[in-house]
Image 1 (cartoon, rainbow over the protein chains, first blue to last red):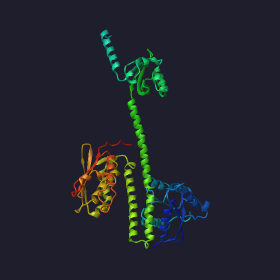
Image 2: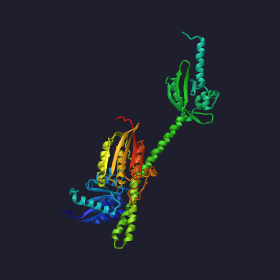
Image 3: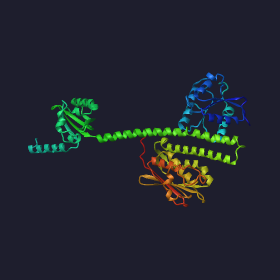
Image 4: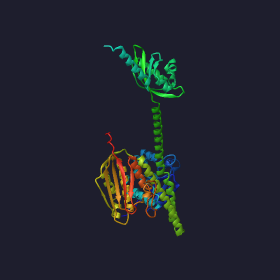
Length: 148
Length: 368
């Protein structure tokens, strides 16, 4: 049985590294179903985007957030903390997608309510596989509450 | 009954002799703050003559920063509080200061203070050195964990970019690249990935310290079973026979003991010869320690490399022959040394290797 989401999936990708943004988008392009990726380049932009403020007034509410940890100005953990405190945002699945393998980062991310912590692999094919698996699981396999 | 006069004189003479000979400084001071009588140890220690020391209030010789507490301590003595372990600094004739440790008691009839001081300057200097060293150590440990974080994140990212985008080029421009071009990309990707493995291995080495747990009762037989479980596929793959004697319970960090066994067994599986692999783990009781050994029938090691193999990133085979960065034994060595043990190898090329490591006896830590 092939499951497909019956609508456009909105993904918010928060990453300061343009290279990673390109790679992640590349990986998502190969996914079997349609998704639309918005980009935020640091924690401030991510929260603006989620709260539809500033230049992100027309940003869509994402179905899934892919969040890097080490970013300038406001890091991923701080963003995650604010998302989980915000009534309108707290149910959105957040997957940490980062280069960090530090035990402290992993622990902290889960403590703050990350749905999943994934370390970006060095191998491109692995990266594609992992990003597509995340996408598939959170937008198709997992049942999430309708009204958020 | 009184002693005959001769006996009393003799007694007095003995005390005077001790007074003259003592390495510690004896002093009798009055309540006004002057030394009334001091022994020669004072001159030997401070360099001032008895006359010089008695001419002015003794507090004049005390380090300005210690004067207030010295006056307070003397005041305490005069209301009946004995001095047990008071410390202050006295000035020497050469202008330097020496640390003195005091014990004193007042006599109220004569209004005199009887005091003994001991020169503890060397101990103080040593303590200061120790404090500095400890602070220095804490600082370098902090730097190490800082380094570990940087290695686990900041150094990985650029490498990932190099490897991933080269692969993207390979994929996207497959039609444009010839065999040589694809080969070049392969070399570059391989290099970046190897670099990443090296960084992760260095990190593993630094974690021996940063992730270390205090020693606890460790059932080595249970640890061995866990390691065997982790290695079951690798063991099955080469069809190895792994046996072990009764293993003891020791005081150690169990995660790290597992790591040693895992690395040594892993090496025994990897550096196998042409005959079916046999590995044996045993432990024998020595005077103050347990001596563990892992014996294999693999390719063996030339004795000239017995030291080198425990170094960081030291390898005896090219990467095309056998994979690996050469960190395993360095990690083992670091763990064993952290447990105050030793690690070494006995081997003949072609005749298998026997790796030994010791874990010293330690008293069980008190509960709580």
